[in-house]
Length: 419
Ligand code: ZN
Ligand code: ZN
Image (cartoon, rainbow, N blue to C red):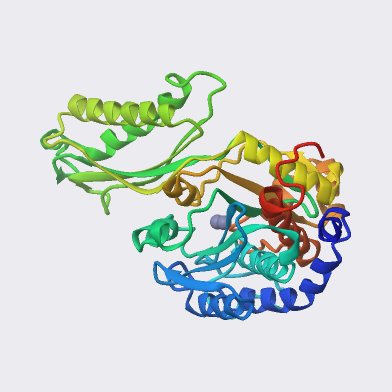
């Protein structure tokens, strides 16, 4: 089939043409980043484009935009991009660097957005090559873990046709032109915890009249290290970071409370539950040991679900990528310790999903850094003020990946796992 060759022979002529409008749009979005739930101009630009290509456009969760393109009785494929920027001051020096002080697309969500738009336009203009319903979903506020839930709370699940599979991707500081997939966990579940422990304040010269929350907090920080080192089996993945400890304001006053902020990451929800039990047990135990006058308070926030790829759907997508990019450009990625709120969407529809990563560093730069053993220090990663994907081929690869992954389910080679 002619269309099939277009996207599977690696030359992807059609996608080349899309780059002529995609690159200026990418630079425009990069220059005008918008923070989570405030993606007003980004959202309006997306909605206008989708409508112009014949998509049925709907809005959920404020700035969330969904375009639905019904094209026959085949499967429904939902593809999602995030749109929000970060409170970071850009330092890349790019001529399309952010014009908004203190706000930057430092996580490539502008790239995800323009790649998904490219795929949407391509599929809209090549309807003879696939059979099904394409749902292009643009989500706000990924960085605060609020956006997918905001869209669901606003009726997303009942407001679009039921899809059969969901797709999403993320640009990473790996070699541009490559894509990484894996069955099973690819991003961790993440939780933040605010713990307040209570002491009894006193003059700094009269410690015997106090219950010192500074000493209590210090003891908790050390003891919490054993949740991973002593209570989690070697080889199981778990992260527990105490990112903030706050107590008191001056040298000669013992304060009456301390606040600790923790961050947890897991690939296994059973282990996550055991870690939370361990944290609460240790904090309560240390408070009892200190004679704390009041039970500690636990507040859980910024909670991200686990992202774990369906093995069969991942095999279809991986085979499609291998046909599109060649075997050398497709690798099996190890799970990332970062987290995402994407999986709430397929979980709400009770459908499988595939999430993959796309490289963004010029191959010569990447290989030199790997050869020198300096990839982790020399290559700016996501959220760095210096993070700057190579526009080409990253945008081309990300767009082709979205097209190829959708066709893996409703294209002429749907369901083929032999590359
Ligand atoms: Zn990010
Ligand atoms: Zn991101």
